[in-house]
Length: 398
Ligand SMILES: *Cc1c(COP(=O)(O)O)cnc(C)c1O
Image (cartoon, rainbow, N blue to C red; front, side, top):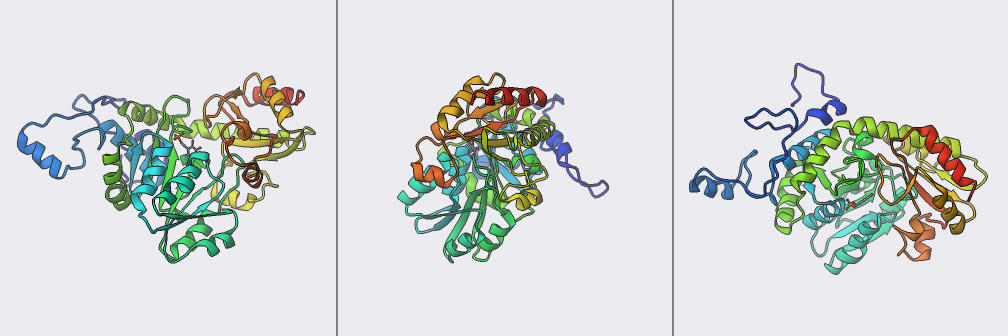
């Protein structure tokens, strides 16, 4: 479904249901799952031509492209407002693919230091081994970005809202600084979600999602996506990824496509629940802090409100008495599950210091606000009153 001059531009909600749909000769209503790795050519000359240059709806091999995967790519690009997108096997395949496809030995990268553990591994361990110099900065401090960026800076990379301390980075501020030296702005935008993302209009060049999170939204499949200009996606990313094997499975692409259809409704409901819980728990005697980007006492509240319509589906709470108390709280929960996905229909509680961020040195944990009492809460689709009851009852045990 395309925009036409005779109609007002389609909203994200409409695009999420229709964009990118391709129908076979059967005219199926629901997107077909093309669970095939290969494609048959009518004759050898066609095969030769497709290997030389395949057209828009011509496929060769599922590592290069597949009709179900292409529907998902077109739909999420239409949502994010980019010309194109490349789907990957996981969020990490997307982060690794985007960075490795564009960087060469001798390049310089500046990254916000509050990063998902595996992103930190790529930036701190992998890229430097290959001669890419990486400078980590406090992403919330625009002066730190200004000082770190150099004429040879090829890319900047950050999470727009960090995990698990929910620092919010000023996308437009960082993009303006990066663009003065022509650096590509690459954003890991998972916590903002495609529903609330305004990353492209604020200056992002490349927007990455782990679609394992809110896009699937029901904890079933791994997936990822790199959204950007056609030049970047087809000219830089595709040649790298199609030869290195990070392709998304057509089955997972189908699950993600169907997830996109109701993502807007899910994520808005989950975000309302997260804010409501954050407001209700604020000032609770067992808690040292309640962190949510749209609470007025959040350190980047103004940026969060200006760049995200709602504050996201996650809040973090800091249990004042530390790890033992946090464990007692977690173990007393009955609806929130102890796990580490987020953006799921099921509410999930995570203790970052002992799980997702266990391996970070203590000083780094302290610097990133990952205290022994910190618990990340991903709000699901359950009744918000039930969730609040669950949390307040479990806090009695903390
Ligand atoms: C989950 C996550 C990733 C990694 O995604 P996978 O699909 O697990 O590979 C990267 N960045 C952020 C912010 C995430 O939350």
